[in-house]
Every structure is written in structure tokens, then in C-alpha cells.
Length: 284
Image (cartoon, rainbow, N blue to C red; front, side, top):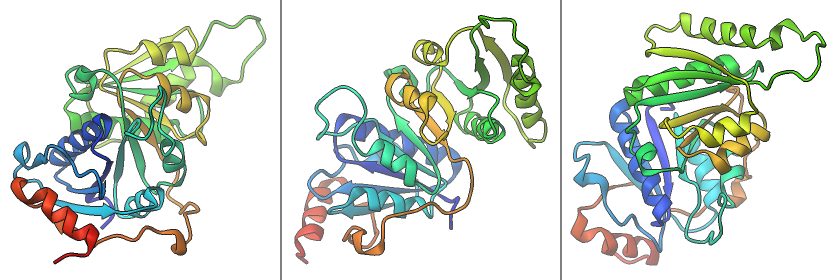
């Protein structure tokens, strides 16, 4: 059932492993099942059964078309987690699958990146970026939920440079109104974390790059606009991209979906590589 599963894609790379462990901790805190999607050639190097021995978990070996596999997995998941880049991406920046996955995912997406302290959740803070757009309420509510899951405080942040002219601005774009609307979005929550609201008189990209004191930066989908892309490239912490609606998005046709094995329980550490090899080669 959608909402009971956290899905994660990993290729055995440094960021793939970071994504796996971030997702496992999140699923553990949520009381959710973990669905691991991994390439046949690169099984996870550190089976997380050591850290979360009672976590309900399935493993799905994808042999090709990872984008289609991620999209399909997102249909049954409340969250999809990926590393910012994998082994095939040898340069700085984000991997080639990150933006396409965000665009086609049927749930919220977390891209794991940044400093170790943030990835490990040591700051105990979640930061939500609001702009006065129509997706602000869902950004704030999903950020509050993430903060409760991570046992963290919530900071709702609006970055707006000082105006260069004295032209009047629309009431909904007034910085005080933007933060007031964000605060209103939290009042209807049954539970809410300790929450603060802050206006910073600078450009959003400057705030994003400088927020080294947060464990998770939450942004709207914005059709992967400037703020979202800046966060994915520059944030010193994992980034949660909130899906703006619940209507189905266009997904790859069935003919392009990956050939894959059935979901299997996670094998014991000493049998992991043999088990995966047999799956991919058709052995018994």
C-alpha cells in the first residue's frame, strides 16, 4: 500500500551507500518497510541488517532501465531516496538520473548529498524554503512531518532580497505575508515540531549554499525550477523535493520497464553476493 514503503536506489557507490543508510534510518523511524533497488553488478556493500535488524525490507535487483524501475517503485512508496550521483558519474554535480527521476516520481524524493554531519542527522534541524508560491503549504506540512520523523526542529525560511525600487508589491508576495501563510499551514497539524520562521534578505541560492546547520532542506517541485536545481547542486545537506500534487504523472510505457526479479527478503551477509549473482544469471 502506498504510504507504507520507503524506496531507495543504490549502485554500491559512496553516495548510493549513503542513500541506502539514510533511507533505512528514515524507514525505521517511520515504522515503514524499506524497498531497496540495486544494480545486479553492485549489491550494497554494507547490508543494513547490522544496524536495523528488525527493519522490514525487500530487495529488488534491476538489470536495466533504472529510471523506469524508480518510477514504478515510487507508485507504492511514500518516499523515494537516491544518492546525488553514482559510480558512472565521474564529475562534480548531480547524476544524470536525478532530475528525470524527480520529474517522473509519483511521491516525494530525497536526494542525499552534503556533509557527513547533515547526512547523519546530527544538526537536528529541517529547513523548509517558501517563496509565496502555491506549493508553500505542502512544502511546510511535509517539512513538519519530516522534522517529526527525524526528531528535529523545523525552520521555515523565506529568502527575499531588499527591493531595488519602491514599487508596491502584491500582498501575497509581501515577505511578512509569505511567512504568515506558512505559519497558518502549520496550525492545522495534529502534531508539529518546534518551529521558527525567518526572513533572510538575500537571494535564495545564497541561503541554500550557506545552510550548513540543517539536516534536510525541503523545497517545492516547481517543475524543477531555479531554486530546486540550486538546492540539488549546492545544498550542504540532503534535499527533499516535495511533489506538488497527487495526480498521476506521465511515466515510461510498459515496454520500457525494467526486467527484474521478484522482490526477495534480504539474505544474510555471507550469502549476499552469491544470492544476487544467481538471480542475475538465472542460476538456481
